[in-house]
Image 1 (cartoon, rainbow, N blue to C red):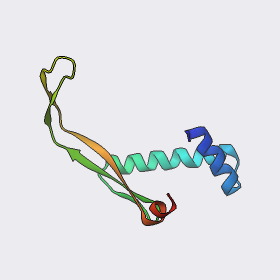
Image 2: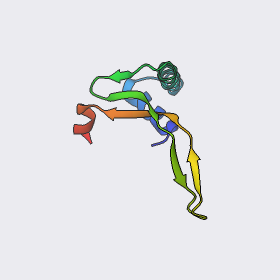
Image 3: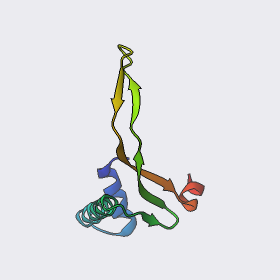
Amino acid sequence: MNKAELIDAMAADAGLTKADAKKALDAFIKTTGDALAKGDRVALVGFGSFSVSTRAARTGRNPQTGQELKIAAKKVVKFKSGSELSAQV
């Protein structure tokens, strides 16, 4: 499912217009991104939680040449599904 299909499904399920569903989805994405950028955790009971984790620097290998290269440390977003979502899947 892509973003447009998600907007269509949200509009149909909630009885909203597609424009309102798009605004709601965009607001959710922006608000979640802002909270994660500040280092906060976003938890939606039953659905799951989003958090930020730091991935340590490490040494990798170029698969074509076999040459070692350094991979920098970075922050990554993690999602852990909630019990209701896991049961539904």
